[in-house]
Amino acid sequence: MIQEKTIIAPAHISKTNTPVIEIKELYKSFGNNEVLKGVTFSVNKGENLVVLGKSGSGKSIAIKCLVGLVVADKGEINVFGTDITKIDTNELNEIRVRIGFLFQNAALYDSMSVRENLGFTLKRHAKDLSAEEVENQIKEVLESVGLSEVIDKMPSELSGGMRKRIGLARTLILKPEIVLYDEPTTGLDTITSREISELLLEIQKKNKTSSIIITHDMACAKHTADRLVILKDGVIHAEGTYKELEKSDDEWVRSFFI
Amino acid sequence: MNNIVIAKKESIIIYLKETFNDVGNITLFSIRFFKEVIRSPYEIKEFIKQCYVIGYKSLPLVTITGFIMGLVLTLQSRPTLAKFGAESWLPSMVALSLIREIAPVITALICAGKVSSGIGAELGSMKVTEQIDAMEVSAINPYKYLVVTRVLATTLMIPLLVIYADGIGIIGGYVGINIHSDVNLYRYLSQVLESITFLDIFPATLKTFFFGFFIGMIGCYKGFNAVNGTESVGKAANSAVVTASLTIFIIDMLAVQITDLFF
Image (cartoon, chains in turn brown, purple):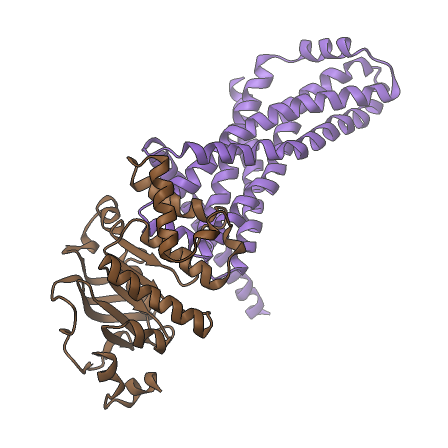
């Protein structure tokens, strides 16, 4: 049985009302385990949407469906007005170039240096760039995440926070219009988490990106969210701003903010 | 007692199902290779890097094993041939055994251990740490970058390593012969070359391309399909060696039958 949604506030707190992502009635199961049971939400242009929920509630699966890493069983996923469930790999790749994805553990390529990690994607998508231009863009994006000095280091030589920043730099090098963050502050100390949260906001302001941020870190959610949705039992249970949800009548929703 | 029999039957059925499932999936994975290999973009740099890693870096191991193969084969065969007064056939026998069977199979098995497990572990680790997913969301085809380059490299490098092992094995044979008698190198090599024909070299070399293809393909398949964390990386590497070694023997058996029919 699908639980009734407790919509606490409508989705018009966003910066513009043009949705860049619209997920409608999304279903996904793995064997007998139904993870998503009709998830519906949207992200407007320039908006930061934070997705909360217990571990295993399907938050990561939802954003993986958005980039075609996980194939949804049923439902509509409109990104930039195109339903990605109905397109082929080439068309999907054209959309993927416009989306950045920061993985939970940054997923840096172990066998490549930081320079190679950043250049790997850029060289394959901006073939008209000269070697010098590629180098300049790598340096520029490293500077934007405050890590110019690690350009020749290998991922194994970097700390957790540095890896996240380099992962973010790699995500930003193609100047995406949407950025998806899968637990950007998990495993980091409070200060580094705060720095990463500030960096996310800075990037959003600078590049005017729209973002979905999956997190358990309420400080990060408070700092970055324009709007929050909370997943429970495979559906969106609550939706609203941080302040609205914090004062929710629903005890379960409030428990996230304690 | 009945329960034990039923349980055993069930476990055999499950094992067979998994095996057939694996065979089917490896076949589909291999078919994808032929589709992707002809499509641009071509990852030339990565291909050359893999040739270096798979071919050049395997040279020390292949040199040692190739030399020992030739030496031991000579030392072990010598007493039997001496019994029949056919000691003079030793260079021909060693060269033919090495080129037709021993060097291709042993070199391929060594590469299954070194290369296939390496690829399985590397790609398995990339899979569980989401590096392969990261490539995919960046609109880069991970199959093309990781699988096509590695399979092409093994398909090309294994035959070259086998030819190299043939040569080193023949040198090992020369050393083996000279432990007990004094044979001139020129005479030894003349006898070796006289005994070898094109039909000895061609089928033996041809099968090594298949060895190379499956060594790479199985390693990539196992790595690409690693799931459930770091434990599966070890499993992928182990399973790659076992499956690749078994496949080498099956290909060898088929190759010998086909050679027997046509050559």
